[in-house]
Image (cartoon, rainbow, N blue to C red; front, side, top):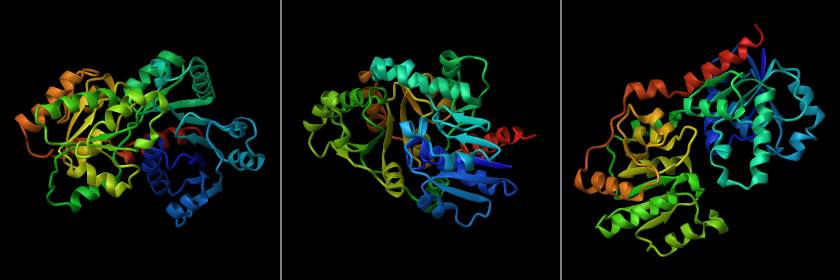
Length: 362
C-alpha cells in the first residue's frame, strides 16, 4: 500500500501543527506502508530522508490556487494516481486525483460567522467545502463540535471522524527540561487579529484590570504589522498603550513560544469560535494557568481539566476573572495529568487516520 499525503501546508499554523504532529507516526509507525509526500523537498527531505518508505514530490503549488484547481501538472497527478489513497490535512484537493480521497476539515467557520468575509468570499469558500465533502470518501475533523457543524452545513450522509489535535512531543520534552518554572508577570495571547479570536475585548478587559492595579504585561504572540485596515480600532488601542503594558513578539520560534508560555502567569484565550484551539493545551503542558471563553468547543475539549472559563464576549467578566486569578487568588502552576496526555496524542490521532486509510484497500 502507498499513501499520498499533501504536505504543502507543513509550515502553516493550525494545519501545519496537525500535519507535523501526525507525519512521524504515519511513517515510522507503519514500516510496511509506503508514502508519497507532496511538498517542498528541502523541508521534507530534512525530516524524512532516512526513512526508506518515503518518496517526495517537490511541489510548491499554492493550495486553493488556480494552478492547483485547473492546471495541476500531469507529472504530479501521474505519480499520485499510482498510490492507493490520497490524504489532505485540509480541504483543498488538486484537480485530476482519481484515487480515493480523504480530507480534514478543521472547522467550518465561514458559514457559521459569515461576517468574517464578503458574500462573494463566503460563496467561494462554500464551494471549496462542498467540493471536498463530495470528493472525499470520509472526512476527518478535530472536535465533535466541528463534526456537528460540518454535518449541519454540508450534509449528514458522509462519514465524519473526530481526530483531536494534540501537543507536539517537543512541549513535553521542554517541560521535563525545566525543573522549576519561574513565572513572570505576563499574560499571553496567541492568535491573529480576526474578529473570532476575541483580541478586541481582551484588550478592553486588560486595560480595565490595569486601571485596578494589575501589574502584568500582555504579550501578544504575533506581529503588529499584520493588522489590516478594518482592524484600526484594535490597532488604536494598542498604540495608546505604553511599552510596559503590551508586547508584540512578532513571529517566534517553537523554542521561544514554549519559553513565553512556560514563564507566563496566565494564558487568555478569548475566542468566539474555534475548531479545536491548541494554545490552552500547550499552556497546561508547560504548567501555565489558562482562562478561556465558554464557547461549546472549548467546553468539549477542556471542561475536565484545570482551566477557568468566562462568558464569551463579556469583557467585564473577563476582567474580573483576570483579577481574581492573578491578584486575589494566585495559585501554584498547573500539574500535568496522564489523562490529558493520553486523550490528546498525535500518536492516537495518526493511528485513527491510518486505520481508516488502510481500510480502503482491504
